[in-house]
Length: 201
Image (cartoon, rainbow, N blue to C red):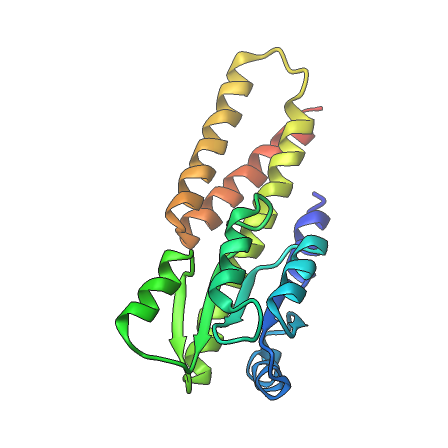
């Protein structure tokens, strides 16, 4: 059995976009997140962040609110308007105000979290790790789906098609719930189905 595509996916680091106009803040974020073993990409402005997002896919964005020119809220609004990036999770980092209305504005622009500085490094690292894990599993699911599409294309057996469709539905439901355990189980079931199709050839 050849599971090389899955092994490669687990080894491939995810990209994390760090957006802050202050180099010392970016350096601090790199120190906090470096132990995760992922690819950390710097952006010193909202404009730089949008350019970076055009070039690559990212697991999560850490976005400073208070920046000159395009601030974090405006940057997030642009990110959420783009089809390619609208589903990338954004964690806002801010020192400007702890008032509820500022957090509400962050969530209303599509942020998944809003952390006030100074924040606990362990908490930030744990939150980012969850999104990296979810991104990796979603990436694995996409590759599984591509492989399944190749395997079932041209099949005339309605039972096989129905079975594959049921697996895909299970995966989509798990992703929709952001249920990591469910996603893992769905991926395993898809892998077993793909292996069965491969050996049946």
